[in-house]
Image 1 (cartoon, rainbow, N blue to C red):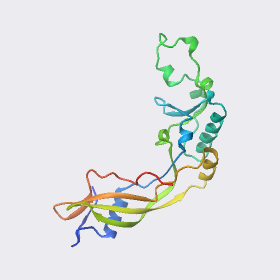
Image 2: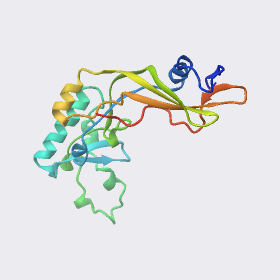
Image 3: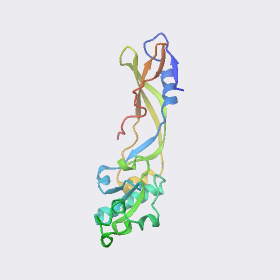
Image 4: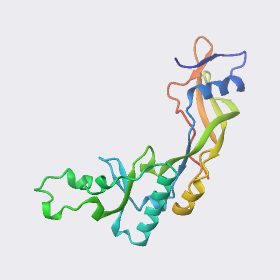
Length: 206
């Protein structure tokens, strides 16, 4: 059931009421983002859900593999096993012999220096890097006669392994220190999360 709170005399919900709604409706996550320069070195295996580094990348490829290794060591993803690396890559396994001949087919081992699991967000360079919770309401502002914008701060505790990831990958963008949520007031004078509200914090900030 969607959380709701009865409105007080004000046109806006109280900060306490708004914080309760935020805590009930939003699953907080501490998400960091890899440097853009690192993302350009990664090759996605979309069908088999893996992120790989091509062997032809030279010294940059070694750095990218070290980054994936650091992510796996920290538990943000996991390395793909030997059986996976011995298979053909997605684009080849899905192609018929009339498109790619058996003589031109090479295993992932021959093409990639390493692969890890494409965990949630890793395709965009995002990974879990700690714990977060809604801490307090920064402000509640009126959007229109029946809607209010709630801005709240987040208490973020970063994983100690993040330092090793920074060293291997380059400094990751830290989780957003604030989030926002739009509430709407029903005909019964109750505040609920707006039907078109975007749940969760805005984009990460430095």
